[in-house]
Image (tube, rainbow, N blue to C red):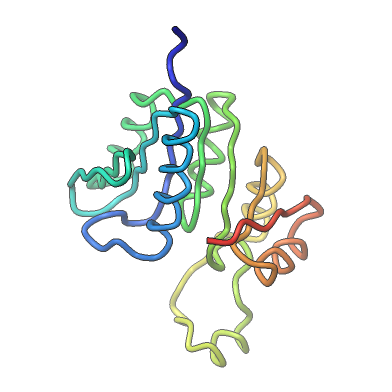
Length: 168
């Protein structure tokens, strides 16, 4: 019997706060576990802890070094990333020749302008990856998904890649 496909998702702080981004990633992975028997793990940086949600292991690790070690140990067959973990995930996917799915659920890869930040009350302190880094991540990804047509349109302004919409 073949071993199950190992899917690892990199997210922003997964525990103890379980926000909308984490919930949507866990929901997607739980569907893969249920329908295809995949082994799914979500990893992020935050106060250390582990939980299980719908057959998905959710791990919060103390720092980037621990996160990278966990990635190597997990030996994923597919990497999914979202939020501020996409740049790290892209580098890891390239190093280990893994398929990488970027699921844009926020503005990390298509940041708001200063005018939009003011209008939407988005932090002016927030630092986003450079345009070159964002383009590189999007070009190297195996698949680029956005959680809305609005974000898909914004991402298409950064890259010539096709962006598919996968609503939460």
